[in-house]
Length: 424
Ligand code: ATP
Ligand code: MG
Image (cartoon, rainbow, N blue to C red; front, side):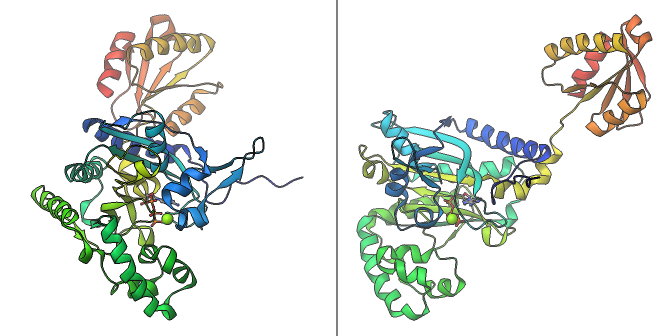
C-alpha cells in the first residue's frame, strides 16, 4: 500500500465552516467596495516570470526567494505563480488600454503564492483582496484608500483598539537617491552587526535593509538616516496634506519612518494596518502609491495607488464574528415513506422558487424518523419540516422547532411559506 498523498506544506484546505466564514468575510468586504463604487477585475494566476522581476524588483524577498517559477515545457518560457496582484493589474491595464488618460478604481480577490517558511499567518498559498487605483495624483485618493480600509474593518466588526495605522512617505526619486547614499554610508559603518542578507543588500538595495525582520538589525535601523529628512517640497506637502485630512476625518495613525514595504515600486505615501494580536505576522493590510510603475512597465506615465488585505490574517481576527453570522441551514425536511419524499421534492421546489434565500436541506438516504431527526439536529437547522402519510393526504407539514421550546405546529403550504419568510 502506498502512503496517502498530502497537500503541499503551507497550502491549506478550507473545511466547510472555515470556507463559510471566509465567504462571509469576503462578502462583507465586497459590499464596502461596492459602496465606494470600485469595480472588479480578474487576472491570470500564472504570468511571465519577467513581469514580477521587473515590477516587484530583483533584490526583494519575493523575487529572490519566494517565487514559484517554472519553465513551460512546450516553448521554454519562464512562468511564475503570482505572488501579488499589482504587477498583473498594471500589465492588464497597459495591455487592455484601461489606463491612459483615465481614472480607474479596481479590486480583485484570489489566491497568491510565495515559497515562504510556513508559520502562523504565513502560508505558501494565501488569499488577498487587492485594490488598485489609477490616474489620481492624490493625496485625496490616498485618503480615500485609507478611509476605505477603515470602513472594511468596521464592516467585519474588527475591534479598533487592537489595530494601528502606520504611515510613511518614500518621497520622490531624487530624495530616495540622496537618502540611499547616506544610508549606504551609515550601514557600511555598522557592517559587523549586519547579517549576511543585509550585507548583500547594502549596495544593491539598502532600503530593503530597513525592512529586515531581524531584531538586531531593526535596532541599528532605528538610528539610520531617515528618508523624511530628505523629502522635496512637493512630497512634503503631499504627506502633510494627507496627515491633515486624516486628522480631520478622525483617523488615528502613527508615522513610522522605517516603514518601506517589501516591494520596490512604491513612492510617496505608504501605509500598513498592523494588529497587535498576531505577533510577528501583524500586518493585515499594506499599500501605498506607485506613481512610476506604469511607465516603468512600458505604459504612459500614470499615477497609481493601492493596497492588499491578507485575508487569512484578517479572518483569524474576526473568525468568531463571521461564523456567528453564518446560518447554513434554515430547515431540514424529514419524510416518512416514498410518497412523502416525492411530495417533499415538489414542495421544496416551490419554496425554493419563492424564497431563494431560504436554505432547506432534504433528507436523502432514507432512515427512521429518529435517524432523520438526528440529522436535522446536526444540520444546525432551526426547523424540522416533517411529512408522513397523513400530511401528504392533507397537504400539510408538521413543523418542529429545533432550537426553541415552541410547540410543534401543523401548517398548510401557504402557512409554511409565511413562516419561512419571517424566519429569513
Ligand atoms: P510581510 O512583511 O508580513 O512578509 P509583505 O510585505 O511580504 O508582508 P505584502 O506583499 O504587502 O506583504 O502583502 C499584503 C498582505 O498580504 C500582507 O500584509 C499580509 O497580510 C498578506 N500576506 C503576505 N504574505 C503572506 C503569506 N505568505 N501568507 C499569508 N498572508 C500573507
Ligand atoms: Mg513577505
